[in-house]
Amino acid sequence: MLINSGSLVGATFVNSVLGFLYWWVAARLYTPDVVGASSAAVSSMMLLGTFCMLGLGTLLITEIPRKPEQAVPLISISLLVVGVAGAAIGLLFAVIAPLLTSQFSYLNTTFTDPIAYAAGVSLTPIVLVLDQALMGLLRGMEQFYRNTIFAVVKLIALWLASLLFAHLTGMNVYTTWTLGNLFSLLVVVPALLKSKRPLREYFPQLKLLRRLGKDAVQHHLLNTMLQFTSFALPTIVTVMLSTRVNAIFYIAWMLVNFIYYITSALTIVLHAMNSAQHSTLGQKARMTIGISVVTSVVACLILQIGTTQILGVFGSIYVDGTWTLRVLLLAAFPLIIKNHYIAICRIQDRVKQAMWLIGPGCIVELVAAIGGAAKGGLLGLTIGWVAAVFLEAIFMLPAVARVVMVKKSAVAPQEDVFMDEAAEAIWLIETTRLPAIDTGRIPIVKPIHSSSSVSATPRPAWSASVADPAHRKTHHLKPLRLEHLTTAPEQDDSLADQNDLVPHHGDPLLIERRNTARPY
Image (cartoon, rainbow, N blue to C red; front, side, top):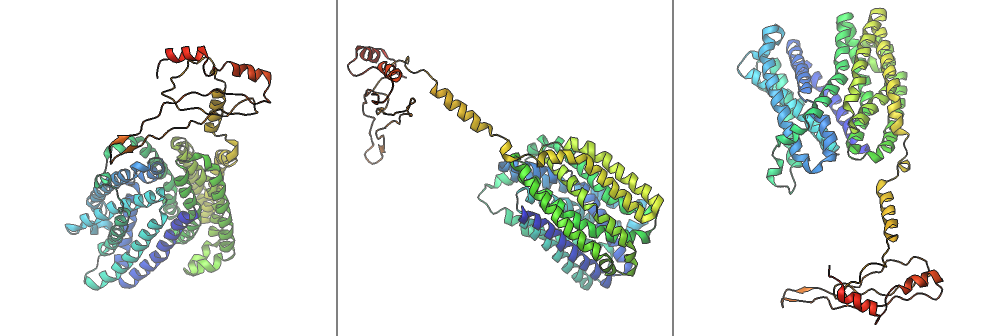
């Protein structure tokens, strides 16, 4: 759990650090117009790509542990579906967007521009779904390697593009993201295919996805609700306040989201590990909640003390967001409950029930943020949103507590109870009235002497029956005979009376039963 969660957090950290370096290099090598156009193209690509995931990423985390034998074809058909959807929507956006606004005219300047944009949108959901599929397989390090390769390749490609092209456009910068995703796939996917599986097992099987279509739609709607607030808050700040205030808010928002993601990464791994094993859900949930609380407390203390110094690194203007960052940090604690509630609902196949709470919660968050911005500006917006998140956590807490408070020993394994009852029932079977068995068809039963009232189960002594391939001879079972069962001297009279019912050698009853018994 710690390795896979750490790989998610590590991938986010690498993308954040190298992403900052990427845009710093872009600002040095390219004009502001090119940087602005490329950032808009990348933002739209991420938005469309995330939408084109169609809920299949979280669906794979649920289904892969439950159906490991179908993991490979299920992953391949999911990547094919999201890739085709991304290509279609990306091409449609590249054609329509320039007609609606001149700000996206660079998407359709040449014949290849729409194709290049569609390729980037198509690869985005492919790599995002693959990352979540790797988490379902608990192979988080491959996910970390892919994200690292992506961040490094796009940075190198950005520098090479400034040397190779005399006329630079926003599409030059945008294409570096496409190349980064493509190279990361070419490195990671062949490593995943190194197995002894037949090639036909890697082919997509649409029937697997068709049966899960309803579940995929539910996951997609839930993911859209969860991501809507993150996309909407910066827009609300820009519309209701100003772009300058939004710049201050966005820096603080990006810093706290890294803290929020620690809990999110732990719950993603919790989802992957307990999707097919519910018995340890309470134990693992207690562990992830404990780690989340400890890391959130440490991170909040560091950022609360050094808020001014950390924001000052980005510029003196961003120091105005000191109290905004301090208030946003408080949301890390209710988000622990919210993220665990979502993970538990996914594990227990209660996604539809989760939507009935997450949907109204998103509306409450937006209304509180808008009302806070109208009354108290940026700080009022922040307080309103954090208060809404605390309110959501209060309603989600009982469901999380029911899972966390369940002890593993409190759930008695049904298999053990069944076996105990079955064993007891076997000992109660009356065997004295059974017909005699042909001695040529059963093994000899050795007499057992025991001082207990219930004797142990006799162990048959089978003679060898081995085929000799060299001589083509088979050693058959030798005819066996029954031996009488005697009682120990210390047995009581009741047990001796029962043993008297067992026929001995030469008993006429035994001879009669032996002659009239039917073979099995």
